[in-house]
Amino acid sequence: MIFKIVSTKNAKSYILGHTVKLENSYLKKGKILNKDDISLLVKNKINSIYVAIKSDNDYSENYSAKSIAMHISSNNLYEPEVNNGRADLFSNKNGMLKINKEELLKINSLFPEIAVCTLKNFSIVKKGQLVGNVKILPYAVNKKKIEKILKNKAFKKIFQVSEKSIERVGIIFTSNNKKNLKKEKILQAVNLRLKNFHLQVNFTKVCQHNHKMLSLTINKILKKNIELILIYGETSISDFHDVVPRGIVDSKGKVLSSILPTDPGNLLLIGSILNTVIIGVPGCAKSLKRNGFDDILERVCHGEKFNKIKLAELAEGGLYKNIIRKFKINKDL
Image (cartoon, rainbow, N blue to C red):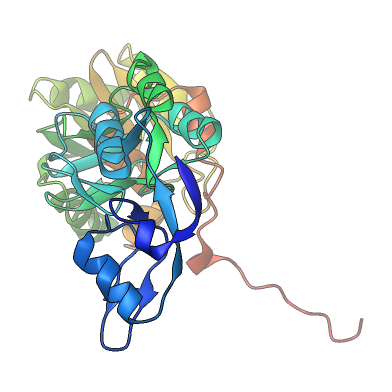
């Protein structure tokens, strides 16, 4: 594509480079100029204009944007809507947006004429919600560049919307004094979170706060076909060998981590027994203010498999600004 100034009289069939304001109207950039447009421009004493001249080796901006958008999107997105070189991507499901961040960065860094943007990775999205778009900067792009993207299998379906993968949730409360156990607040807070992806706690159990009783209770709840077990202990988890992690291990389970790099939410445990995920619920889950528990709960319910690296990545953005402790200024300094 060539971008240059030409005589208005010779601009027929070229792409208008910039929006031109006229006395009572305007011609919008990107328009393919026709005979009437030329007459209108000449009548308004505009004798030269910037135009884009597309060659046979170029694809148009709309074709380029739509082709890329179709290549990078999954089946859980509607067919892209395209206008002015921008292809918008909308979710056709309720679920969680998952982006292949590494490949997204490659597209944006290797192809300067193309910009792909998205909602934040792991966002909860609704059907019909805009989740990202592809924008072509020039009015046309060399065919070889577009085909290079379309032939790259690593760029295929880097946009995914995952539906919930869990149907049944159980919660265990541990307490050595059931009279003082106030489980209603935490149960309400958990259910309000689960409601966002059409889930609820299906089974509740209370047991003594020791690893043997917890292990027995875990084994009982597993028989209820529970896919996610939440454990809210009488006390916070203080050590990898504390009551909650020890109870999981005694039930032949595995503990991936008993600490999370988020604040609030540090004292969250995540583990598993076979295909059942277990979360040791931190005290901050009583509050509906967003914290590390939300990050883990949302992703687990949408099929995300955690490892130590993925947990460590939660550190970035894991300090929640609406609950940062205020710095106390020493007036004597």
